[in-house]
Image (cartoon, rainbow, N blue to C red; front, side, top):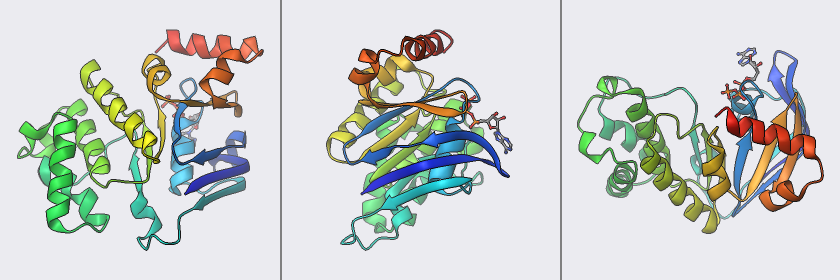
Length: 237
Ligand SMILES: Nc1ncnc2c1ncn2[C@@H]1O[C@H](COP(=O)(O)OP(=O)(O)OP(=O)(O)O)[C@@H](O)[C@H]1O
């Protein structure tokens, strides 16, 4: 499984927000998607998943052919704003993830319970989601995607509304999933957390991909201007 781009440009109605996207996301990668407010992180995640059409260039997803699930059931996608069934409970919303991914009810229940515990919302499972705080709703949405047991996680600002302890346990879990061969691509303004758990950086700035590679290479990069921008971004988080 991999996602490849070649001279990809993304944006809205032919307005390019980010150009020169040239990267390959491979099994085992935990990639931090980094850029200032408005740099185009959400636009990129929405384009990768296909919610937004790409503007120009190439984007390709390759899945292992021996897996006979629909390719999109392999993806766990958590957008910045919450998308959920507002008329049901926390538990029912989380169950939707694995059920729509094709798991049996019994397996879906088991995966949902594990995800609810990981996100520390098991005790809220019978509450209607529209009575929850924004941070609790964010945790429901992430739990639903984790319960799908996806091969690739595309997460937009997953730590917004999470306290330090929950954010750490989520990133520890994602880091473990990457080690098992999944792909994790997550945007966040919490660069300390990303530094600690991710192993690659996709840095977008001024409408372009500025860097894609390992964190070690990024730190060793001679382009001081780029590093200063990254560090500045860290200060404003
Ligand atoms: N529906 C839209 N139509 C036109 N332009 C949009 C639309 N949504 C976002 N944009 C513009 O695209 C640019 C990138 O926005 P995007 O939300 O992708 O940035 P971001 O890096 O995710 O920002 P943040 O860190 O604040 O979440 C911004 O200039 C924004 O104004």
